[in-house]
Amino acid sequence: MINQKTQIMARVNKNGNLSGAVGNIVFVNRYGETHARRKPGKVNQTSNTKKSASGFGNNSSQDRLVRAAITEKIDIRNYQCFAVNHRTRLGLTIFQSQDEDGNTQMRYENPQSMVGTIFNNNWQWERAVNFYPDYNLPEDNSMMVTIPELNLGKQIKLPKNATRAILKLHALTIDPNKRVVMADILSSLTFDLDKNQNVPSQEWQFQIPENTYWALIIATISYSSPKNNIAEEHMHTGTYLWAKKIAE
Image (cartoon, one colour):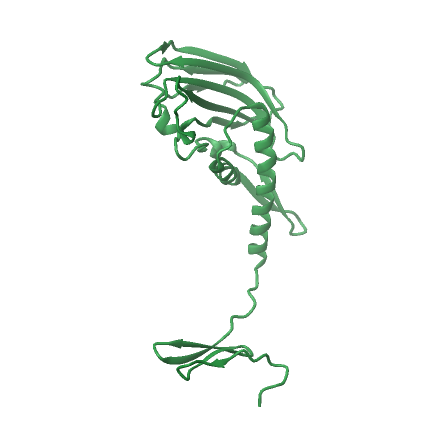
């Protein structure tokens, strides 16, 4: 006898087969035959699964603060992929540890994973450029970046219909572990390039403060044309060129 508290949701269909559920038993019809199986029980999360889910949520929230601090100082076109790619790369810098009470602590450590972050999936940095700066950071934190000769059309590629590009390089500091995240620009360079124009090689020098947690270099390129006929997905690109943890 079926207990009166058991919920009955099974029915006989037009073919005379039982379908639906009786209590925790589910009836499934396949190829004219009726099969019975138990409903899956409640999924139990392990402590590691719960910690991973919590860590993912914390990273998502903190990434919004980091991106907001950076985009407040640097013009980065807000393509939807930028947030996703940035959050993924920032998550790769996380170091998790446990204290004496078994509580999981999450901290952003080595920023090297930020290098190469794709700001625009439709016009990626590696497709857009063919130049590689040289970076030299001695012990006194006096950074020297050697930028090779640039030619619009060779070292900097043009998307369809574009005739002009503005390349910007920004050196900045940031601590993504702070509750209030601030980005400070140390130095910036701007190159306004017309088609087939050559810009000679040059050295870019700036000082990184000793108490800096992360030092980063972000590069962006914006494109234009006299007819304003560049596709929206090709208007802008960018990436992190260089990243280093300076101090604890």
